[in-house]
Length: 502
Image (cartoon, rainbow, N blue to C red):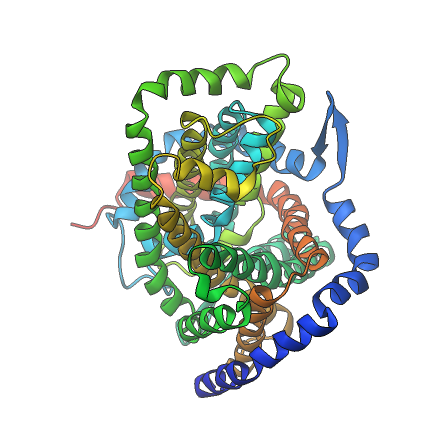
């Protein structure tokens, strides 16, 4: 089966250049967008339905995610702050036993899940948030990231608790399983099955679109902007990306984890160091930048509705970036080697902190401190971030492009696994069924880099956030189970049944 995947990638390489040429001649990408728009637009407008709030639009799905994060924060007694030190100990391997059931270490599980959230949203999305909400959006972005840590704790604890463990040592877990199995325990089997299938359909759509085509498309745009050779050769870039992705995902979660545990720290360190260099070069502007962030967060009047505009943009970017409440990360964390599900809940709560509180905040601070943000200038998204990073050293554009490429690549790896597990939940386990999805995923990499799909990408974004509708309903219904598991875990810590590895 693995050889089959390589053969198909080879055939795809041979035919893709002709495919793009044909697409350009007949305008097939626009034809696709026009054809699907009547079906896609109603779904997109429903998922991202917004209501007017103090002069700006507030997406209800963002409110759904933020309210859930507040509920879980209060219900679990600010677990993200009380358990932060223990989370670091678990990631460090202080309690890890390689004989525990599962496929990957706690650090590998964290790296894999982080690779799905630390992506182009940290670069382009923050630029959008600051442009629309002003520097004050950063404050609310940080707050939403801190709250989202409790959502990750809840969903990833459940993901491990209700996972399926198979005789060959492999596991499958995530919202599909805790929705169906957990709600079945409460006598709501039909509801649980419906929510699980709804989540799986949305997860597959999101994996192929936002977790694949969008990443390929945006990384190609960045690479071609600094390497002229690739201009007009999206098909070639897509093929290279598809081949590399295919080689990694052939080996399943263990192969993905081995790559992400190296790529994620590397790309995060490169990006953070680059941001720190820019900040240090403008160190005199730090007090003013911090002041602008704090004052802008509570300004009665400012860009996009002042405080409300900053709040909405900050919360929106945090929700879109760290995916807390979406449920996707629990699929990766379910593969962890552990003897108690709460350990992975603790590990998972670090994700929004790293993704939003650290990396997104660094991006925002660079934009503000360099004076790159200019209201109503029209410079937004990744262009605003690029402007900020190249404001002092032009060569930093290459670092940003490298970061964008690595972010996109790692995101694609993680979402291939998320989509695969949703696929096998619906169609059954088996190597042949897994290879079918992996082939489809690689084909979509080339499509994403070669075409401007417009409405298709909007649809896939809607699919990702529609996952949160089913997931959070389940989390509300199952959070008493998480509290019971948490109490059991701490009792075992106190008794010494679970203890540090000597």
